[in-house]
Length: 168
Ligand code: HEM
Image 1 (cartoon, rainbow, N blue to C red):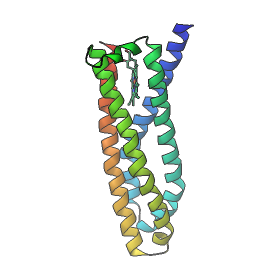
Image 2 (image 1 turned 120 degrees about the horizontal axis):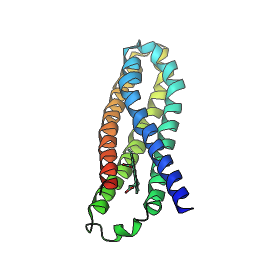
Image 3 (image 1 turned 60 degrees about the horizontal axis):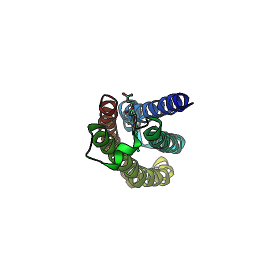
């Protein structure tokens, strides 16, 4: 039974992590460059369809990664090692990964979510020919791209810490 719990939580955790950080890479390398290359007037309608789905997707897979990560602490049978944070290499790297993961989630919630809502408000104006709205939307998309870069950078670091934990 314990083995089954471990198998399921580890599978879900790694799968969710792939969907989260893999989705981040795809957005950064394919989707955002395509949106920025499109004419400003076309961005509004595309963003209106894309952005809410994108935000919903990234938040849910991030939450699934975090929840299954916490479950993994118990499934691995090593949760009590965290009572002494500097007592083992496993505890150090897992705690570092946890802090980075929670920080990354907070960063996304506090930047990408409000910026996306602002872009959605600007979209119809930009599509109607409002040059100032189009320019602001373009600036926000570039800021979202910067957070996207931070996301894949920190995400890669978290994956490294998790693999290091497994090998500890
Ligand atoms: C609160 C956040 C998190 C916690 C508490 C957590 C916890 C864990 C634990 C306990 C393990 C098993 C380690 C072992 O077997 O010794 C693990 C594995 C793993 N975690 Fe996390 N994790 C978190 C977030 C993340 C995130 C955000 C990612 C991806 C970006 C991630 C990717 C992985 C991967 C790929 C493994 C498998 C490593 C391997 O089997 O070599 N984790 N995690």
